[in-house]
Image 1 (spheres, rainbow, N blue to C red):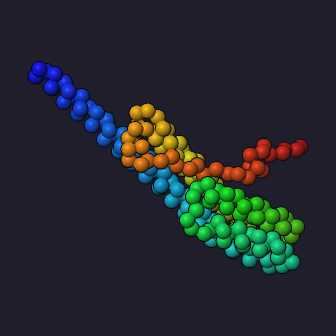
Image 2: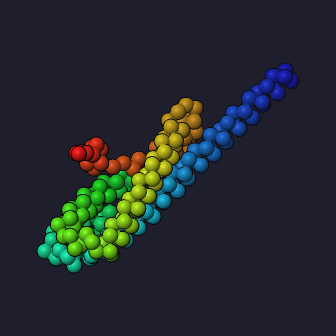
Image 3: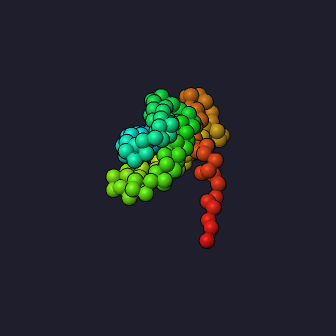
Length: 186
């Protein structure tokens, strides 16, 4: 009888230790996802801060392209608004990326603008920021994947549902051009 009670207590200790470990793992993963999103948010804010300078530089050369400037400005305002989920933010950023593409197409028509040192520097800053956003998105999505796996796989799904851990949203691009292979011609 004494060995039976010891075995039951040992089993309970093992189950409690596993539950604590599973809970702590879920908390750690949730915090990593939140931290990764904050890093993307910092880079998106940097992107949003660069855009008005870029628009003003292009305006000096192509003042008759008002519709393009307004589209970029409006897309930036929507993308910079706080409180969006990762999926909504991704959609807003895709609209902004398309508007920026139109702005750069306008810049292509002005050789003096393309040679302007300020424009070149802003374009380079924006490119570097885009690269950091892409790296941040990969890091964020890897953490989201880890959290989502833990919240769905058995037996940690039991702890996840008991304590309200939910799946996180991926930050994905919806831009069809980004999903196509580039056309290379020689």
